[in-house]
Image (cartoon, rainbow, N blue to C red; front, side, top):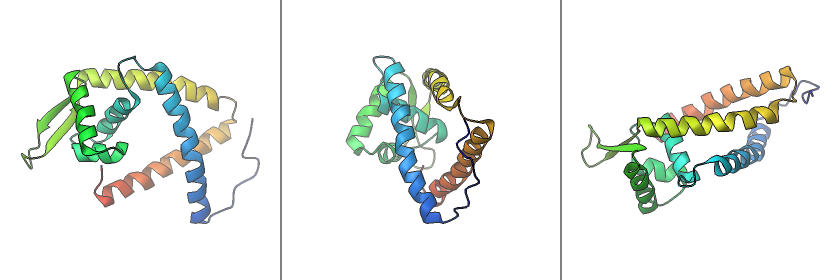
Length: 160
């Protein structure tokens, strides 16, 4: 099935932003639903999100995780405590500031993250399978562009 029958000539950043805001929640709903249905009974979606965040931002602290997940610092600390107790992440004193905690994914956490991703990928691929090769290539290219834009935004704002 080819969805992009004609070339999109819309180049207004506001229209593009609107499309991103409309589409991202739909994609995230599928991802959250799949993680919930496939996760081990004792690992929550927020815990999976922490693992994924720390994979992308090793050494991040509690405040960065709280901000990313959208929870309070005490709630983030409790979430992190559970992951540390299960040896999925390690907590270390930051080399730059001993008052700050640096968090990293352990080998067991890496395995849990990889298993989640390995289970999720076929579901998403199945949803894309009926698209034309051109549409799949367009989506892949768009994801590369979005990663560069939003990854850069995180770096310039000082957020992890």
